[in-house]
Amino acid sequence: MQNKATDKIKWDALLAKVGEGLMVRTDSREVCDGDVFVAISGPLLDGTDFIPKALENGASYIVCANEVDTKSAELIIHDSPHEALGELATAYFKTDQNKIKLIGITGTNGKTTVAYLIEQLLSCAGMKVGVLGTVSYRWPGYEQEAPLTTPGCWKIHELLAEMSKAKVDVAVMEVSSHALDQKRVAGLKFDAAVITNVTQDHLDYHGDMETYFKAKCMLFKHYPNALKRGIINFDDPYGRRLLECYSPSIGFGLKSAASSDENSLCGEMVSCTGHGMQLKMRFGDKEWQIESDLIGRFNGSNLLAAQAVGLHLGLAPEQMDAFAKFDGVPGRLERVRNKQGFNIFVDYAHTPDALDNVLRTLRDLNFKRIITVFGCGGDRDKVKRPIMAEAACRYSDVAVLTSDNPRTEDPLQIIEDVRPGLKGCAVIIEDVDRSAAIRKAVAEMNIEDVLLIAGKGHETYQIIGTEKRDFSDSEEVMKAIKEIYG
Image (cartoon, rainbow, N blue to C red; front, side, top):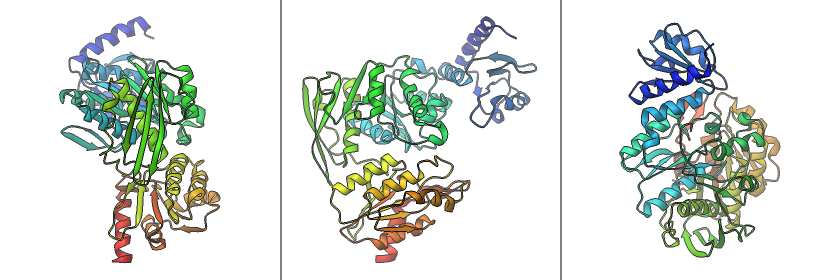
C-alpha cells in the first residue's frame, strides 16, 4: 500500500505532465497509448471495472480511489477521482490562468431564464458573454445544442478554454444538483453563485428535500475557492436558510422583509400585465426602474437575480434597463403566434412549483378558461406525479393529461401515477399520444381561452424507450390548428 506522501509526489508529477499535454480519459474505450485513465464511479457503475480495458488500450497512468492491480501502468490513489479529474482538467486546459469571470446559477426553476437575462444585461453593458446551459452552449461566433444542462467536468474546462480564446469576459453556467453531487464543476473557481429557489424535483435521485438542498448548497460551500459573492433569493425559505449561513452575499426578492439590509436588492412590482411588467428596484440608497416584456411574478424574481449579478460586477443603475427589448427565452412561457389569434403558450414547466407559477400568472390575466396540456417524465421522480396534477388542476378549467418523455417506463402507468391528483377540473381529457392530446386541446379552445402546453418547452424531441424522436410542442400545436381550422 502506497503512503500519502508518495502519492502526493506522484500526483504533482502527473499534473505537470498533463499540463504539458498528456491526455486524460474517463472512457476506457477512448484510451490510447500513454494516456491517463481516471476511474470515475457513478450511481450505477464502478469505474474500477473499466481499468482492464484502459490497460488493454495502453494507459500508462491509472487514477482511482483504491489499491488495484494496474500491471505496468503507474497507479495513483486519490481520495476523490471526481476532484482529481477537475485538477487534471485545470492543468491541461490552464483553466486557472484564464481571465473569465465565472457565474454559476443553481436552483430548481429559473436557471435558464436567469442565464439569458444575465447574458442580455452584460452584453448591453459591452461585455462578451458565454453561456453553458439547458438550451445551448454559446458565445459570440459559436453555438451548439446542449445535451446536458451542465456538461461533464472535462467538457466544461474544454469549453471554458475555447471561450478564453474567443476573449469572453464572463461565462454564465447553469449548475444542476446532479452536476454538483457528481462534482462536474470540480476545479472551477466561481466569481459569483446564484440560487433561484428550491422546490420539489429530482427526489428519485436525491431521496429527500434536505439532501437535494444540500446538493444545491455545494455551489456555495464546497467550491468556495474564489467565490466573491453569493446571490440568494430571500423570498424562498431555503434561500433564507442559506443567507443565514453564507457571507458575503446579495439577497434579492419581491418582499420587503430584508429591505433594511444594505446588501438586499428589493423589487416592487409597479405593474404586471399580459404585455409585460414594470419593476421599481432598491439597493442600499439607490433606486431605479426597469421594464420588461416578460410576464409573471416569478419572472420578476428572475429579473432581480440577473440585476444582482450586474451589481456584483459593478454595473450602475442606469445600465440595468437592458430588458425592454429582450426577446425572451425559448420554451419559457413562449407565445405561439397564429393567424387565428388563439392565446397559446409553450413552457418548460416540469415541476409542481414551476407549473403552479405559470398557471397562476395566466389566471391573473383573466382569460375565460385555462386549458393545460401536461405529463410527467419517465424514469424520474414518481413522488411528484400526483402533485403535478394538483398544480395543473388548481388553476386550469381543462386539464389534458398526456405523455412527456416516458423513456423506458410504460406511458400508461405514468398516467396512472398522475391520476390521483386530478381533482377540481371541470373537464379532464386523457390521451397517451402527446400529438393527439395537443390536437384535442386545440379543438377544445375558444378565442377567449388560453392554452398552456407544459413540460417540454424548447425541446425538439420526445424520448420513448431509448429512442429520441423528433417532436416539438410548438410545431405540433401549429399542425393541429391547421388541421382543425385550415
